[in-house]
Amino acid sequence: MSEDKLKLMRQMTDRLNEAADAYYNGRQELMTDYEWDALFDELK
Image (cartoon, rainbow, N blue to C red; front, side, top):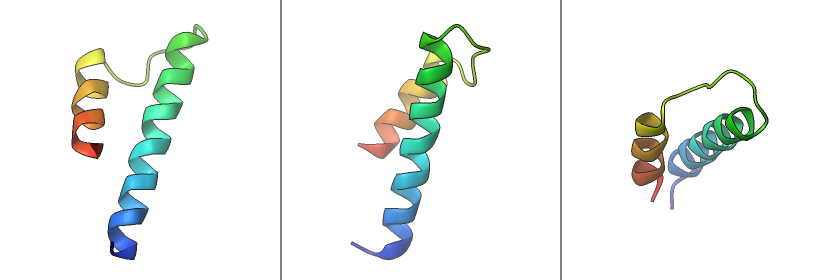
């Protein structure tokens, strides 16, 4: 797997984790459920 692909996967994972943390800890949502699901599907 290329370094660029790994870097993109790490960035996507970080965004998903930040959004989930905000959602589950009562902070302002960083993305909608639809956006989260779409990003998760892209990461898969």
